[in-house]
Length: 237
Ligand SMILES: *Cc1c(COP(=O)(O)O)cnc(C)c1O
Image 1 (tube, protein in one colour):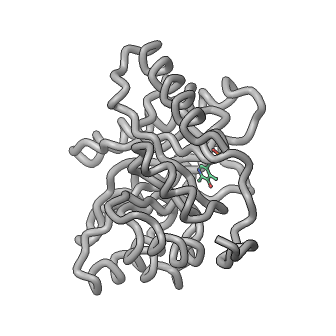
Image 2 (cartoon, rainbow, N blue to C red):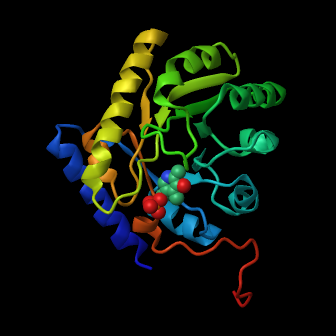
């Protein structure tokens, strides 16, 4: 796998998308999504300068992260079950998939126990798809205010996964609605929310045009996703 070539192409495409709407390339962070990948893939990408990585399963991250270079930044981007909150708070710098007050309250407990202020993003199911996690757009502001009152959580912004479509333009409305929702939340909160995590391999340029500050890229960086296995299939190396 030509990680260097993939990274160069993605970085260029990100810069072009920024240029199109007058943003500076350093206003968007690239997250390498490493679910399914082995620690060696993380190390290779980190050696090329990627600093931010995302995992979507606590169990997988628990095995993989100790094998990865230190001083990387890790975000939990998947659905989090309340019985995994303790591990998640230990493993991740930011938890992006906070989609209910109940989950936030559980994270608050775990963060308090660890003596940590946990950074979070609220996940919004902008399109209201039944198959997806995330709050409905209409409930975000009320839930935001309740979560904001929890002293060991720090809300940094919003995250969404656009409905899948082979045409990235179909995701534009979803991304622009998340941006508008963030602006409303900032008004309600009376404070800025710096992050908008949106855009994946198939639609990150449109997401950047609509204001993404984090794009979460898996397959376009690492190639087709292998199925995760805690034990490598070949033990020769
Ligand atoms: C897997 C995943 C991604 C990356 O998807 P690709 O299409 O491989 O880039 C991004 N965000 C979330 C939440 C994911 O689960």
